[in-house]
Amino acid sequence: MFESQIVETFGTVAAVEDAKPVAPGHMLIVTLRHTEDIFSMTDEERSDAMKMIGILKRRALGIDPLITGFNVGANCGVSAGQHIMHAHIHFIPRRDTESVKGVIRNKMAY
Image (cartoon, rainbow, N blue to C red; front, top):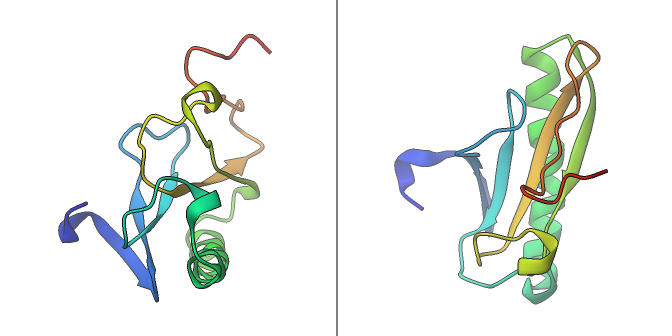
């Protein structure tokens, strides 16, 4: 992660724009320390990540009045769709005007 990609930081985590967003405003909340997934995050990192989710939600709603919902989640392990082996949580604003695209590439038969 390069500092120029960071949109916001809070404690032990940072928010960056997803390189392949499934919707406008798709962000990743990543730990500043390298750790593989959310299960290996410390309690402090998980707490900071939850606070970051709140920060991003308020920011997104203040920018885009069409946002009506959010997807928030993490893929842990290759079989679950994790492609980057660094802890990250997807934050995806959703709008009634767009179709919901899946986030697990090559496994969207549902």
